[in-house]
Length: 207
Image (tube, rainbow, N blue to C red; front, side, top):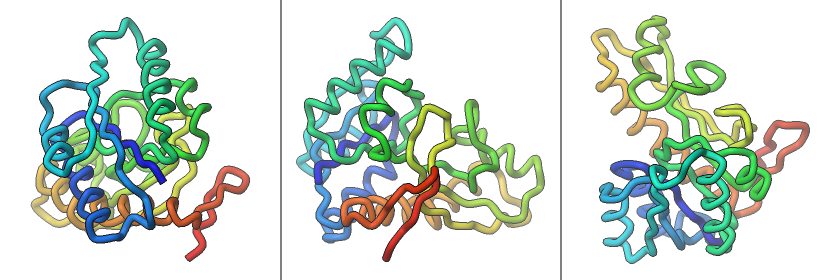
């Protein structure tokens, strides 16, 4: 299956997907293209080092989200993407993309949805909110992308302990290492092996 990965920054989640593919752990999936919403981000360098085609679809060059979404949809269709993975991609695309790739776009979110999710909850903001609330457990969620921000069917979740003295930065690092980097490649593998079904808005994962 052809996998297109969308990025906006350093690409640590992308790197884990690249590593999983090299290790034969993407269930036959192949990363065929990495598309960035910004030029000159390190994620593009990671892809180039791995011999993966890259493209920049600069959000600033489009007047609004709809125009950008149409351009992204067209690019993904041109790439013949079977699966689209958001890996630190910070632009919320509109329904034109979601409807073109129903249950074929997945995102990793650094919290246990439905906690600390939706518009405005990204990056360190998520971990700041978790610490402010005083939760004892947080984690990460991989879910399908729908028109509702962070509202699509949940595929996988993994819990991570919140420790005394955690800062947002320390917690962010732990959630990435212990959860995001584990469940994102795993969700991609399950998808590529045809082991995820969506029934009544919920996923059934068959291992």
